[in-house]
Image 1: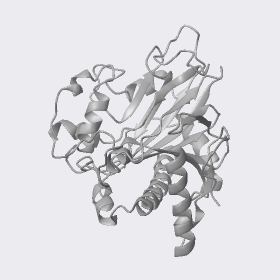
Image 2: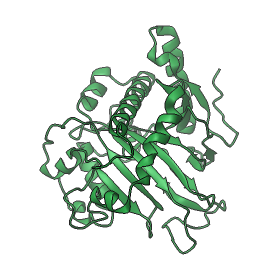
Image 3: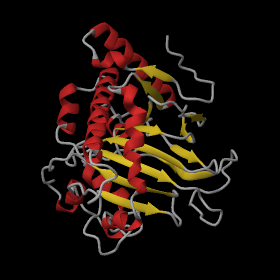
Image 4: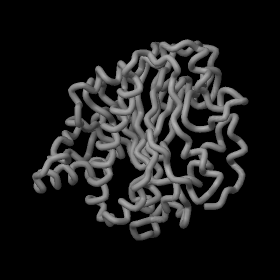
Length: 337
């Protein structure tokens, strides 16, 4: 029986093995658990992932990206780092001076080209991947794509579970995710020097000091793996839950896409990373819809619903988000849908 009123300070764990199986009753039971816990807490820790026993080994191998030289990483940089770069989305970004997080990261999407979105301004989010000329080891690129494929399978299964729980039409969901460019992100948090400030570097009211400020993700769900602890998620009633550190799990967080599609019944889950005074690394996967996907609500709008964005596409939503970042301010101009 799922414990809905979680008074502990850690996120609840759900074994999702059965959502990949053929036993309909077992699958429905896990769907119920996933929906109940997301409704109550906005986050859960998933175990029983495909290839879960190898998750830590694969993740640590991928994170060797950050052993590359600064010159090689800069060659892969987007224009948030290098003004002369032709890349705006896929590639390397470093925020090691000031901003809302103190980290560096490297993003990829699917290895096949995405269809051109209807809005030409959104085409930057259909950008192809870039890869190191000298990868950390010969099989590194293949392992990146395999890890992303595993997370994509997991994200799709969790989305199906959420849709079934909420009573969302299977065809409505499928049409919005049929040609998606979901993102895999490698993250490195070097030890933060005292003089490096981040926007949310407080202390916060609860005394926490951070290396990644409170934020929500632009996706349907975020699936986050951490090599070192520090990740926390905030429940709808304002409590901060620690994400337990384990080799074979990912934490699952609601993103803005589900908030829009559910008319605010499920709000995007704020999360942050505590500064424990030590280096940290993690991998994020963001399960995203098509760039042209309509984010209008699929559930009835009520008096308690969140503000609606009828006709907003996912690509336009991304443009608004990315236009807030230094070096990409030109994206903030109205772009239509």
